[in-house]
Length: 212
Image (cartoon, rainbow, N blue to C red; front, side):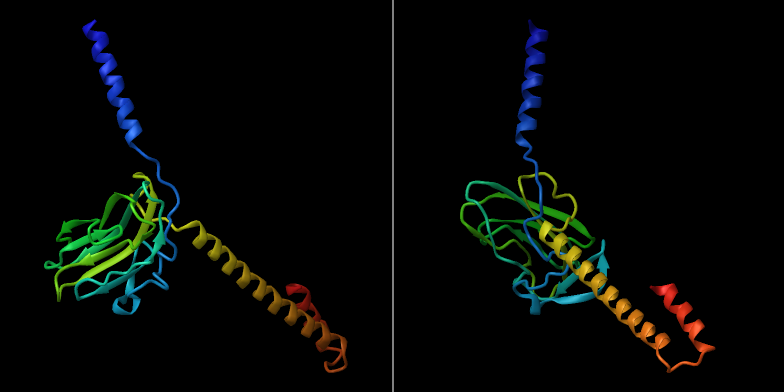
């Protein structure tokens, strides 16, 4: 009986742990690789180097963190995460929304991924990283906001950003094809008119055949 009770208790504990894990999914924040169109953008400096392929932004003054407002569903669990690095004086805070909904991470001098899990209690949030010490340096990159509390360990782009990248690449490919088509047409016109001599036309036609 004692052995059965121990097994039952162990099974219940495992079940509770599984139930406590809420699976995260897509990054709800867009433009997190470049921080394009983020509030307070002009107060931050884009550094010349990247971290993990992400644009790094820094500032040496307190507060006014980079953020983009987002609508969240009240009563749901969310996790905000980011890469941060500062000097020996900075004190890092992470906010999911209001100033009352945050966490202090103290001084961070090496690139570290930090996260803050919270339950939304209003519809508009401003996830951001703050530094409370004036004159100290703080750098950030790779914001991620997910529903739940799992999947924050690394940065991932939002589906909207992936779609935009695909669209941009397709537009570039279409433009390149249009340019190639125009060049082909121009060469075709040259080799078919009387501008080139009889000796020059075979060489130009061969070039046209190579790229057509």
